[in-house]
Amino acid sequence: MKRIDMSLLVLLAAIWGSSFLFMRVLAPLLGPVLTADLRTLIAGLALVVLFFILRTKLDWKKNLRHYLVVGVFNSALPFFLFSWAALGVPASIESIVNALTPLWGALFGALLLGEALTLRKMGGMALGLAGVTAIALFGMGSSRAELGTEVLPVLACLLATVSYGFSGAYIRRWAPGISSRAMTASSLLVAGLVLLPPAALTAPPLASIAPSTWALAATFAILCSAVAYLIYFRLMSSAGLTAALSVTLLIPVFAFLWSWLFLGETLHPEAFAGAALVLGGTALLNGGGKKKAGAAAG
Image (tube, rainbow, N blue to C red; front, side, top):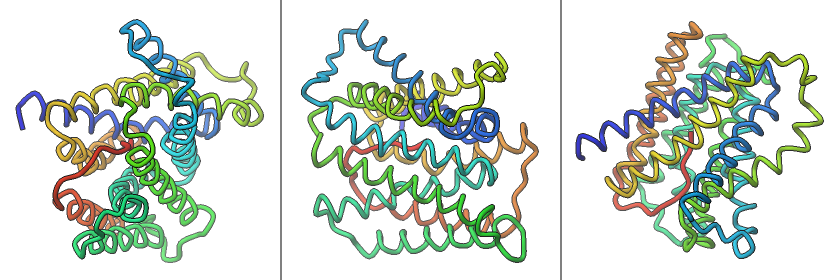
């Protein structure tokens, strides 16, 4: 990998690692639905305007159904689930579970695309799920995990990665001809519009939200969705998909660092053991040969 590509990979991991920190801060202030909605709506609008200026065709009439499916399963649903989970679990825990995304990508690839589910892939899945189980039951340091405050938030993160995995397989089977730029910008905007009604119903009074909170939400959307996806697709084109997907192994490193520096979060030994299992399972999949384009998570 070229030096510039390695720099982009580290930068992308640092940005997506910070997304869990943003959610941890914003979700208690805005609520999880509005947090997810602002992330998708602002980023989608920014990218649509940018690509309009660059004369990138989005083909809304032709591809609206695909934009809706991918918008829901690759943005609206997982972003909401991670934001809701951020109310109860540390940012670093969320980032560990997020690393399961390639495992579900492999499973849906087998179910929807007929890809081989090899012994290596099944071993990676088993390791990853064992790691998430350890995190859910013991990762918060308590002798007995509480269902509502510890287990359910981890399961919400797990469901978010399932949603990412499905959307990646969906794109590869039913929407392979849509450009990555058009899919990203349009699906983010559609996700923001889908989340708008529930966000309006559940949001705190707008007058009670400080200007600094709005600014933080805008920064979150532009940095962690708009800018991050532009870097991701640049990395895919220059270094290849396998190199780009390896970002999932680096994201928890930066999530640990940012949450420790800015939130003072620390993890218990059981969480580190679970993280080792999850990342080990992901490494098995990432080393398993050639991969096709799919959805990104962060």
